[in-house]
Image (cartoon, rainbow, N blue to C red; front, side):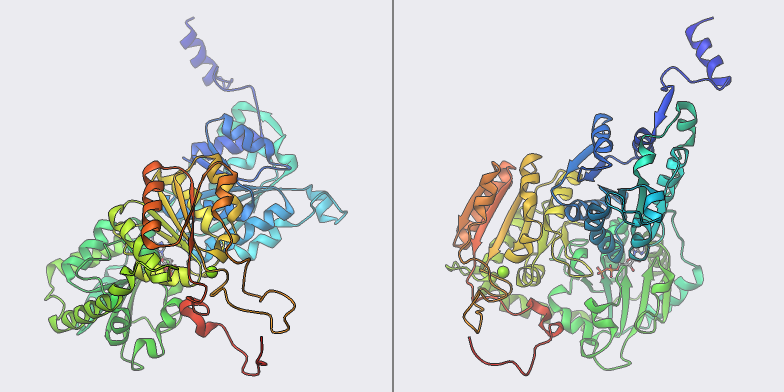
Length: 585
Ligand code: ADP
Ligand code: MG
C-alpha cells in the first residue's frame, strides 16, 4: 500500500490523518476556531487564565497585540470590527480584566461595531456557590445586559459552536458586541484530535445580505420624488457597510445634497460639490424630506425634532437601516426601508435611474451659498500662525496634513479638540475618521490608533485633547513596542475645556485643570519614540510631516492657549450649570 492509500484508508476508517494531532485541548480549539473563521488578530492583556492562550495563538501565527489595560484592547477590537466588518477580538483575564474590557464592549454595542470580548473566568462550581474563588464573578450575568449576546462554553467539544455563535451574533443584522465566557478549566480539557477538528464550525455567510421589500422601496421613492428640499444624511452605518460606490452613485445621480455624520465623513470627500456639511444647520432646518442612510435620530441629530429641525411637522423622514426596531424610535418614519445599506441603496438607485427629475436647483443654490459663506468666515482663523496657538490655528495646520495625505487615518477625541477638528479637518476617503462615536466617550484614542495602524497598515494621526489622552496614555508604550506608524498630537491647554479654573477656597488645584505646561512629549521619549514640543502651527505641521514620513511612533505636545476652549466644546447645553453657584476663586 502507498502512503497516500494508507492515509485515505485511515481517514475513511475514522482514524486520525497524519497531520492532525492525536489529542487537542481547549487552548488549541479556541485558536483553531478563530483561525478557521478568518480571524487574524487578537487584542489582548495577558494574565490568569488566558496567558498561554495568547502565547499559543502567537505561536500558531495569529497576530497578538498585548496592551497595558483591557479597555484599550477592547476599544482596539471594536474599531477593528468597524474597519474590517469582521468581529474584532479582545482577550482578557477574569473579573477585573473582564470588567475593564466591558466598557469597550458596551461602547461597541452602542456604536454597532462587531466585536467579541473573550474573557477567562474562574471555576463555575465555586463561583455559583459564592465560595470566594480567585477573581470570583458571574461574568456571563454581568455582561448580558451590556452587549448584543453572551455565551459560555463549558466543554472543549463545544468551542467550535461557541465561537461560531459569537461570530454570527456580532456581525449579522445590526452589528454589536458579544461576550464569550471561557472558564479556566476549559482550556486544559483534552479531547481526541479528530473529534476536535470535526467540532469546529466555519461560519458560512456570517452577515447575509438583507434585501428591502419592493413595496418599501416604491414608498421611499414616492416620498423622495415629492420633495422640494431633499437631504441625505450619511451615518457611520453607511461607512461600515462598505457600499461606497453605491452610496456615491446615489448622491451623484440623484443630485441630492448630503450631510455626513462624524464617522461618515470621507464616504464622499468633504469637498464634494453636493456636501452640505458646512451648511449643516440650514440643511437640517430647511429640508423637507430627509433620507437617513445608516444614521440614527438620536441625540447627535437632536432626536429629529426641536429647533434644529425647523417648524414642527415640516419634515418627512425616510430611513434605511438593517434594524427594523430603529424605525419610529424618535419621530415618525414615513418610509422605512429595512435591509442592508448596499442592497437598499442599489434598489433606490434603480428607481432613480428609471425616473428622476433631479433635485430642485433653488435648494442647491441656497445650500451652496450658505456653505461658501461659512467656509469663508472660517478661513482666516485657520491661517493664523499664532503663538500660543488657538484650536483653530493648530487645526488649520492638521487640516492641511490630511489634505496632503488623504489615506492617513485620523483618530480624534477630546471636547473642543473633537468638536472643532470634526468641522475643520476635511476627510477625503471612507472610514478614515475614527472618533468618540455615539456616546461621545473619552478614552478610545490609543486603542483606536493601535488597531487602525495594525488593521490598515496606514499612518495614523491621533488628535487628542490633553484630558482625553490621559484615559489611554499608557498605551504609548504599546505603540513604541510594536513600532506602529502612529503620530499623536496632544492639544495641551492645561486642562479640561480650559486650563484656567481655580479652587475658590484656594486649597487645591481647580477640578478641571492639570499640571501647567506639562511635557507629554517626554512620555514618548521614555519608550524610545520621538517626542516634540511645538508652539506654532508651522512647527506643528513640520513635526507631523516628519512623523508621517518616518513612520516612527511620535508624540507632539502642542501648546494651546489655556484660555482658548469653551465649556464642553459644542455640547455645553448638556452640561448643567448651577444657578446658585457662589462667586469667588
Ligand atoms: P451615526 O452616529 O453616524 O449617525 P449611528 O451609529 O447612529 O450612526 O447609526 C448607524 C446605523 O447604521 C444603526 O442604526 C445600524 O443599525 C445601521 N447599520 C449598521 N450597519 C448596517 C448595514 N450594513 N446596513 C444597514 N444598516 C446598518
Ligand atoms: Mg484640554
